[in-house]
Length: 354
Image (tube, rainbow, N blue to C red; front, side):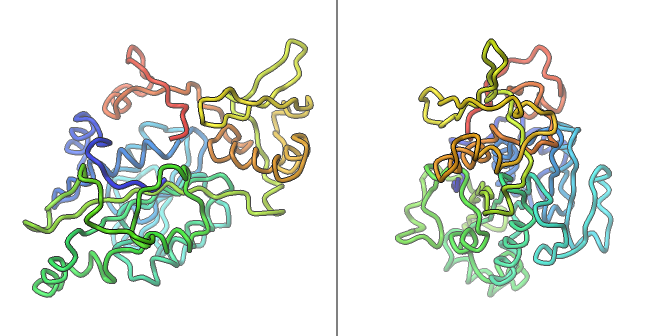
């Protein structure tokens, strides 16, 4: 999934109010954050028990908002700025002060990583090193949620930077080459059918960006800034990942009358899912390995594709994660914050692939 910020996909007024109340928008009133934060949270698939990193978190309370919404998760925040000032708004998070390109977390350490409006502040080589480091820290099936600021009307921007050199900190190497960053990460877009033309792809033209664009002029009149959001996932990478311990998510697990477990392969196309008969061993509370599941499904590339798809859409999950109590959540972020249990709040199904 690679999507431009669109007004048709913008958040509700409730989240805008939440941003104002909790200073989620920076001091320059960059209103792109009204799109960026809810978009990132909506597509992250955050669940209890996950290990989550906000890379380049700065002093935004975004991670605090996530912790209040889903308190039963392990939160980390990484930013070199923390070496100079401790982030008081992140008392629940474990802090790291290394630059993103030098993160020392173990391989496959996180289930979910955010990196929001950070990479455009790095030079081109550091951007590539940072996305490689973040991808390395992501477990198979995990998601990396990125947003980057994209500065429209680049000639006008270049002229403004020449007049105010401090503004070069936003774009030390110009607008990011998003396609190159994705290639460097080695990750795959979560939804390949939801990819907008973007910088670095053949034939991309800035003027062809959707006319429903969400953008800000907080830097100065006529200097338009928009956002581009990416959700990438880490596929199974070979023999080393076959030892990953998994369990079947409740929505994909079915039982016959005699107790035989069935695994439902949800295709995400609206078609009825195919169900595979599994041995009773699949119900072991300790889970099973990805390699075992591939063999139970008949082995070969087709079985590997089923497991890969299930990891992508989280009908398979790491054995250490507890299932969500419900697959639905309240309609607005404001209601989640005020009423985490969602009692008495209208609900809608959030089990789709987005």
